[in-house]
Length: 172
Image 1 (spheres, rainbow, N blue to C red):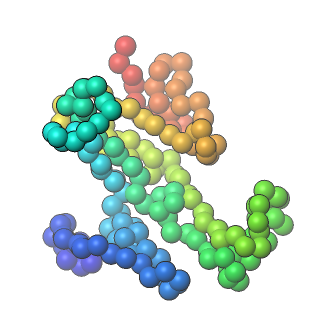
Image 2 (cartoon, rainbow, N blue to C red):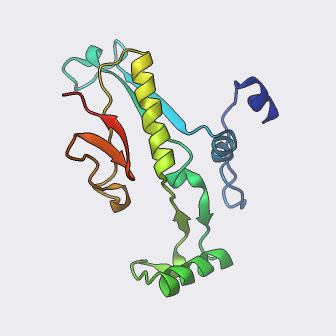
Image 3 (cartoon, one colour):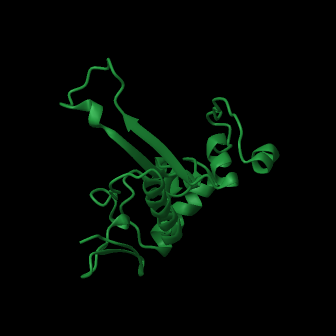
């Protein structure tokens, strides 16, 4: 870990997390400790690969996915543990949650999503597009399945508003 910090580069082999060992994912620990918040996934077609896309050679995009918040925060309690039972009591007694379908056999995870985390990911994608002379940036959220992510993202001036912070102004 110290070498990663000092040289800002490193080589890591596949890491697996023992199932039922009570420890969190080693990959998640690396991401969080080093604040590796961008998961950058280039998407392009390789000649010779069969695809249903009409002009696959035109595919050239980069997906930026948040890598330390949401499900990657590692805030979880295994089913049947005293911590899971305590969290369930908090949900039902303090927060009034009644939608846990099978409460006695459920594990729990908290998915924190912050304005700052979202903002820095969007900024990273925009900066990448500018540096690499890419023609556009498209923002996608999970609003169709997770109401937490939805809000009126664009105001009357066609800018994106993240929690009251206008960060992007659309070109007219």
